[in-house]
Image (cartoon, rainbow, N blue to C red; front, side, top):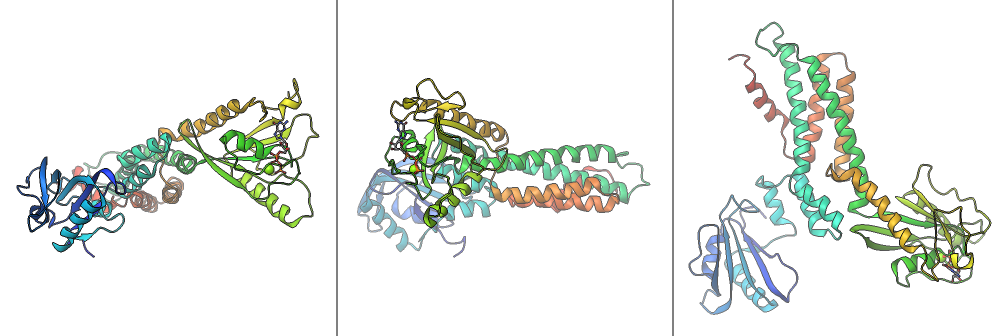
Length: 436
Ligand SMILES: Nc1nc2c(ncn2[C@@H]2O[C@H](COP(=O)(O)OP(=O)(O)OP(=O)(O)O)[C@@H](O)[C@H]2O)c(=O)[nH]1
Ligand SMILES: [Mg+2]
């Protein structure tokens, strides 16, 4: 399997559909399409054509789009056929393409070629994957920023700035007695490095938080047995997902439901009621409830209004918690101790809970939106870069400090998989007038 193969695939959704889009990419794309379509345009244009078997039998008519490489998605010669979206039409075209020596693309192979040909870097590839799988508005916004190169640009700018700083330091070391080295560079260099280190630390925090937008904002419903947790979950999602009975200890497993609230993907978890128990199954349920709460972005702590206050210490301190008084219909005018009082009988308070969840998810979003935060994969590289910058800033030997800057820039380059620090160094040195 090599990039010399010419590949094809159905790039639109499953058939039958109104239109099917067949993508062909590779060195033989034009040659093969030329058999199916008469008068294939050789420039970037779209034409209506009959699409025929090699024996001239008509398969369908459709739009033919031609992208000569390298100005195409993959960087190779590409042809796109927009035909009627029936299985038979698509199969007939595929069998002709196979007979012409082309092969079906592997999953992700078009994007892999775009990467190999320098059309996309790794960060943009990840962004594209996220964009295609985005279900909510916020996931889309996060992904489009990343797939359009905004995030790569930030990583690359840091890597370039650090490499420039290192070049200046090395110049100072190597040519300390020459006149045309930019004079006493060190102070400016370390000011810049300090600023970049701070920016990278902010990026790490944002990236860790971004998980709650990309995956889901995790909301865990916690509280004593019979507080009305399962009834509350059912009311919020307006479906009968969890079993409700008057028996304390009904829920044993963690029950998860995904919701789109104002563009945020929210994952609600109902859990087993917390109490001391000898029942082994219930103990395991309670262990899972605590675990879920510890990993939540927001805990909704439910308790029936006017009931004996329970000590629930299941979550780490500093965790976001909303205290919710339940069964408000039974306790009119009470519930001053709670953030919000709800009743699943009357619907009271449910909208306020939804608003509060969106507000918390929005705070998270605000912290990451401007930074176009990437994936957890990026965090480990960013942390390494941050660690090397710390070493560079604390060090005393100038040559070791320069080496730490090189390692930091290398860690950043690895995120996009594109920036070769040594190549950049040549460019930067060529800007100096040393040895001219
Ligand atoms: N009047 C009234 N009853 C409620 C309300 N919410 C829940 N209940 C009742 O309270 C009882 C317990 O409800 P569940 O939702 O099963 O409580 P839970 O917290 O999930 O209980 P466990 O799963 O055992 O921990 C049921 O009989 C519900 O009908 C409410 O808002 N008003
Ligand atoms: Mg329950």
